[in-house]
Length: 58
Image (cartoon, rainbow, N blue to C red; front, side, top):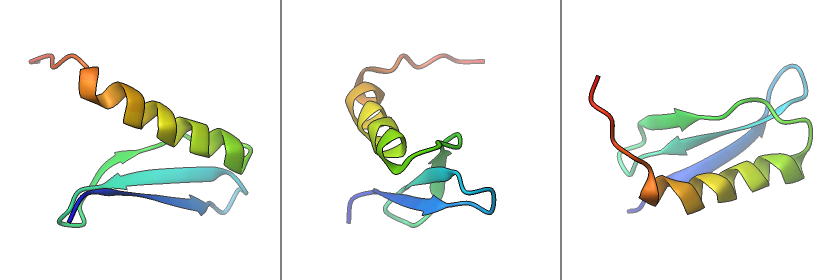
């Protein structure tokens, strides 16, 4: 099973999403968005940019 995005509305009325790994562990959490469309754009941005993200060792 592949990972998945979960979208919800928080107590403040902001849209947020989690990216969950195939084992159900949350591996990323978004900021709050004022609209569902903005949150969906955030998901698309993660999908587009995560594969090319640089890995930095701290």
